Length: 138
Image (cartoon, rainbow, N blue to C red; front, side, top):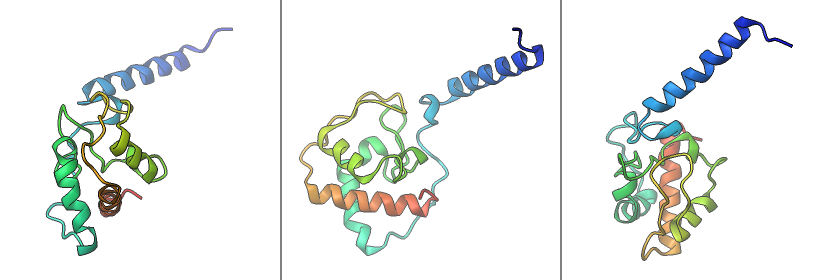
């Protein structure tokens, strides 16, 4: 059975459009890093300040000062891929503690974060979740 030419043409167009779109992105199908559309100059509530401080010391060299990502180093965490229903808090904890294999992005595997405590990870996760919400990621 032959497909109609218009359907076949549409399928070829859709597939080639997706390939061109992915090829133009900085780091694969997940999108560019760093993200440039985050809220500027946010006022971080006191209850998240320790998490922000821990994030800056332990995570920002790869993920950026505001989790916007760093080109050729690490993905943005303020991204729909890291919303709670896709990467829950336990996934963040495991990644910090044990590292993680590359997925979604083309930065390579993430190594474990050196000398990080459970309390620091918990503070960082609280900060990241608050910051995600501020930027429309629920």
